[in-house]
Image 1: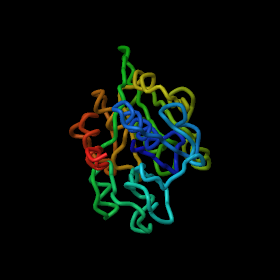
Image 2: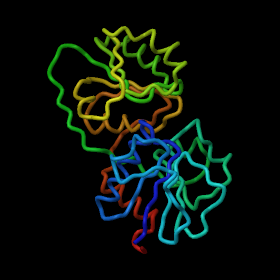
Image 3: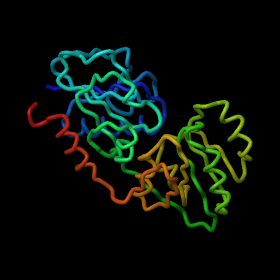
Image 4: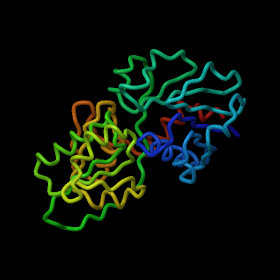
Length: 265
């Protein structure tokens, strides 16, 4: 049986890691043999997964989906090698010696920025149960890694300028100097609260009335799609592609099957 191997150069908490966990689970739920390999430990146990050091490639019965990951050349025996691109502003494809057969993006604006043709397939969305209790307070959320590229401090300021009663930060600090100098001074533990990284999406969204993002490097934020699915107000910026319609997971699966040439397995 053909094995799908997702190889990512990043598997700490973050949007791309969550997206690949969801994709791996979707594949396996539908009888496709998929394993997600990454250099960190966060993804382990959330889907069929392993570490990169335990991944062997160049098998005639494998399809590789690579992300944020460079290979010196295309494995000769692999059935197909796909580059999955989730970034804009980092990992410019034009600077990399091609080792892939096809490219999959998550948004049209991302493909435009990269300047290399490919296929656009949105991220798989998890099922989220939001149970927001009625309150007069307006609570804003900022969800994602706390990093200079995310402009977390700008999101905080935007929420405060919009007179939100409380701002909750959910995410892993991945840029300590930025946290210390730009974000931490805004966290007072009362109106602006750092909640750390929380895996449970139900628990996050059940506290929120609006979500802010001000990223320089994202164009198809997973959080924006989650908000759309929940009917929750999302305030992005000019870099983040507006979500007008949602693509169902069954449609996403069919798009991937076409790229993977599933009917000929």
